[in-house]
Image (cartoon, rainbow, N blue to C red; front, side, top):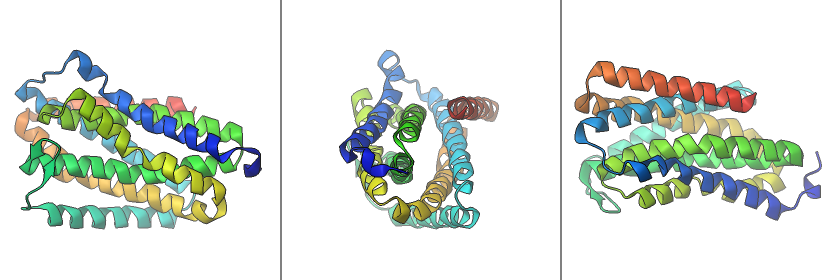
Length: 248
């Protein structure tokens, strides 16, 4: 390991690239800005499939570091999201131009993805601590992986009235912890490395709960179960294939 041979500024800029890439997930909506009401359920199903696949990918990645810490992170993420849901339930919440239930769902979605980005930022920094070649590969992998995550965020925000530009900016915002965490993780690799599997599991636990408790039930209200199941399955399968091709 030769972390000092790489400029910390270089690490920050590479990690910033991963955050900007998240905003690209909103691009498809430039061509289809108006989503019919009965398509909202299918959009939620697609977001659920992407999030489920990403969650299990995070758990799998965490297991490479430490089984116990990854599972601890899953439990902590589950507890955190449940407490957050109870705190927000029944309260007046606003998110940009959104209010009420839509605002709560949008806030939780962006919040979970933001928490998820802390773990990915640590991953970038730790990777660069192992050498520039490894760091660049992991950065590019996360950047490409972030595009469908931005799509998942956009699938939740845009049908509820958020503009395409707004969804892209919120997507980028959700990934800003990546450059912010990559730098200290690079400079203090040995300190941050043990926390990485906890962070990965934490994000996975929170996302799985969000899919099961919020996104899927709403999808089933808006669309037929057969359509929801089909879209969810295809989205999850495509994300798995995407992750495998990226890792290979």
